[in-house]
Image 1 (cartoon, helix red, strand yellow):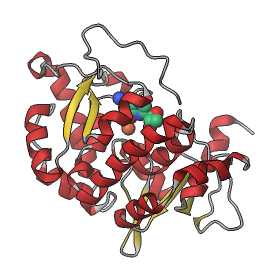
Image 2 (cartoon, rainbow, N blue to C red; image 1 turned 180 degrees about the horizontal axis):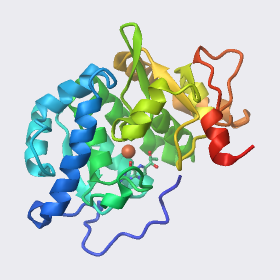
Image 3 (cartoon, rainbow, N blue to C red; image 1 turned 180 degrees about the vertical axis):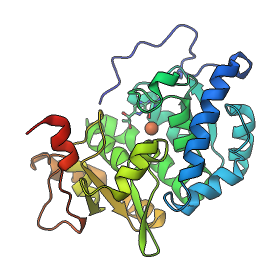
Length: 287
Ligand code: HBI
Ligand code: FE
């Protein structure tokens, strides 16, 4: 998903940031945030990884209304040195990586309309701030995000952004993690979605496979529906370690010769936690 055909909107700075202009939010927009927040906050305990709930506490996310990025960034800065800045929406890959490499998370300032309650294509402030920001208060995950940004800038130079985007997609956006005897969600695309928070853990349709860096980077993904495969990490430490230990240049070279995998594919060498029925996907795309 290259985002390089985007035009920098009028009023955005060179780094695409804009003022959040928190005072401009209407009561209806604050109410939309509260509705989405209450629905997720109620259903996440026992589903989402404990570090996410810890981050919500540290950042006092339960305060009603749309978070003010100045206040949020003050708390986040104290925890891990990160800050949250507003952007008009998706920004070009390079701009995005540059911000992450400098511990800046860029979040859309707009919030979805009530009729978009359950799905919208472009990340809004609820996806970005409720979904992504709590884990940025966790030092290990925050280091992973910064390493991802730095890696993205290098990948850009090697034409390997799409490979790295898959790693982001199957971890930061749609990752699952072991916790005790069970599985928990941590990917922002899941934790900010009521239905996918249930589907990703309980539905028999998707595969749930053990994380493998090379495996993820070969695997395509869907941006328009629930995932057909979720990957499980053992811990944020193991995810960070796998990334820091890898020399990506030879890995990109090695991957060039290998065909991409489709989202539902399962390989003999995969660590299979759940072999999905793909019943949901068939329903959605027909026989
Ligand atoms: N821009 N604002 C914003 N948020 C994202 O999550 C984002 C982006 N641009 C590019 C992008 N994500 C992904 O394509 C990168 O992981 C490659
Ligand atoms: Fe996201």
